[in-house]
Length: 489
Ligand code: NAP
Ligand code: MG
Image 1 (cartoon, protein in one colour):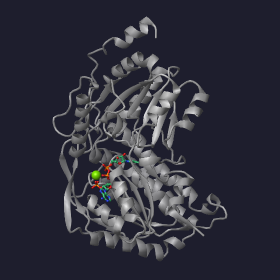
Image 2: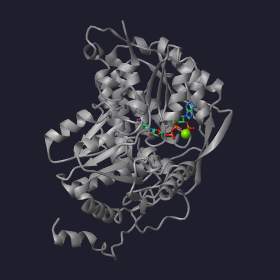
Image 3: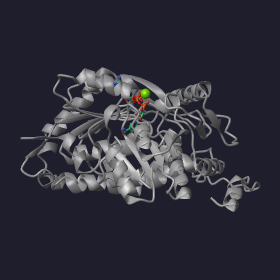
Image 4: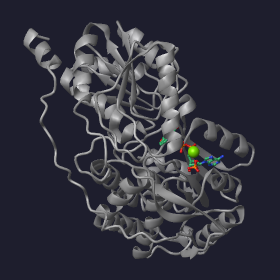
């Protein structure tokens, strides 16, 4: 770094730059007052219900059903009937047509879905519009392409569908996780019952209207809503497979529950990824990758680059560039097109983040938060960087699932590998270096399911995603993502 660059880096951000607000209109979303469960192509009036809110304003949006064991049972029976009465026997080329239709309708209605996703989940509209929606549609397009090619995907193995899949998803990417679950299951000839997260059910419920437009036969996709009790009921029900994305603790409980039952299981769980920056990396690019790695979607990302490993020789410039960049992040209204960091998804999640951040300060890490005015209502957390972090601190060990970065340093590549792998998780990692050979050597040694090189948080439906160790097992995406939904003769 030259003296001039150093000065520029330390100079305060010019003040007086104000952005006008650029809010996306809510008009396009028509919410009903109450929603039931979507069972056998019909709305089932729920026995119990609760209110879902907008986390940016705490304003209630709609009444949502809290599925009872009986209601979950009805959804599973509807899925079983649809499986046996035609769906499983349809030629793959016919199933593909439905998946293509779903993908196209999602594209047509993507603005509506993007607004709804930001409204119910708190994520910036820029992300729901440019990431969640295009990727969700791409996932259906991609698996539509496999539906009539299963024999080629698994030559000489006679792939057969499993039956009914029970699918449980979290709140951080509600529609995208739905797409990751439903598209491969249908392509492989299964029917499904899906439970969205308690705090973010609305995009899954609007998706039922997409199914109607696509004329999907009734019962092929069923949606039951509610909290963890509905998820637990789905795991216990007469399903042939459980696909779960969520926390490691709940994943472990599900695995215990299913042991010995013969039901198939895939688990996509938490992470504590290392984002490793070598001294030959393009630093400005790497800083963008660090920012995207941890502040994308408020850090509510299982593969977030939450542990930054910086080579000691470039520690100072990286940290000063990072702090400077942090000052330019705009936190606030998720529906404002200028917003970079939106609302925290729920009060419970905010409390979890606050508790872990306190522990970081108590254990001796140094905290940095840029000056930032937060809205008065709703759930918010200022983008945060912790330096002076020891590997033993909770903020270096536990998943915070919020906009909080823990910075550690290393001297040699071996030390970087050792520290990166020093976690019970193994979902993802990032490597920033100019040398291709170093990327390959790091990728071999890092124990993580996904490794990004000179980029971060890039997704593509053709690329399998999943974890090692306590991050779970099974893959979603790619040809690999079909396998958990098939049995072979
Ligand atoms: P969670 O509490 O485990 O919830 C995930 C889903 O499981 C929700 O639908 C939840 O319902 C349901 N659930 C809760 N208790 C259950 C039980 N006993 N039996 C069956 N289902 C149950 O996780 P979360 O806090 O919502 O999500 C954050 C976690 O998900 C993080 O650890 C993150 O790393 C992980 N995640 C992983 C991936 C991945 O692909 N690996 C992707 C996204 C998120 P409620 O909504 O009512 O709790
Ligand atoms: Mg939960």
